[in-house]
Picture (cartoon, rainbow, N blue to C red):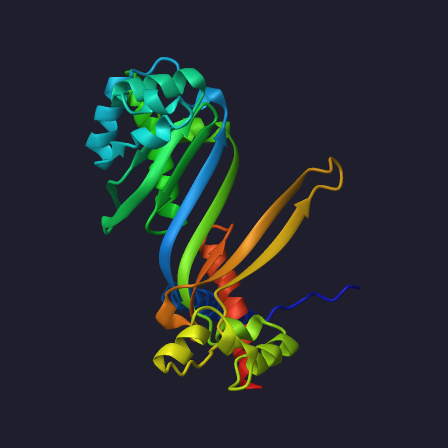
Length: 306
């Protein structure tokens, strides 16, 4: 006869408590990492570009004059006339009015661009400046002095506002299925824990060190060589890294479709040369961007301290 299986309620209770504690520890670790990433990286700018179905915005029926008025009311932004009509002949560009610029862009299938303005974002109504944004036949894009989420908000608000201009109230939830692809660019200021020169191969670092030594040829570069003999200049040479561009090629094995992406490390300002503070640009949305650059900084930190 099969013996009954007795369960110990105390053991089951302990097991449940342990699982709950482990879940709490995981959630706390995730929150700490998220906070560390936010503190580690200072937002510079973020851009979002959406490829959309032509049905996503009422481009053919919207009134050019009403668009400019509505955009200024919502975003305090103005039409970037020069960028909107850049495909027109120069003599025409100088004479075109904002209303005619929008009309011409929509007729030619060009992008209508706006510049400046701001949004009040999130529960805290944080003020985020807008760099530029606009729409085309199959495009919505926005670039803000902030994060990806704020740029996405501008795109969503722009799309719904265009429908509002033609007298139809549509929610973004009705339009998001018409978004066919989304691309991102994010730029932040970070402390990489080591100068960019650490990314240069050791033989190249040694070459630059020799080149910039007292007897090296770097002293004869530029005008300093001639000035030193005329004006008693005593030039010293210091190498530094201005930009590191890392390229990644993506391709689809089935169709052969290919895309080139970049991670750019740039000198933030001249006084930051040979210091660890740099500007980093990736083609990622802000949270993933911060995570990737955090990983790079940790790699450099461990290598630098070894």
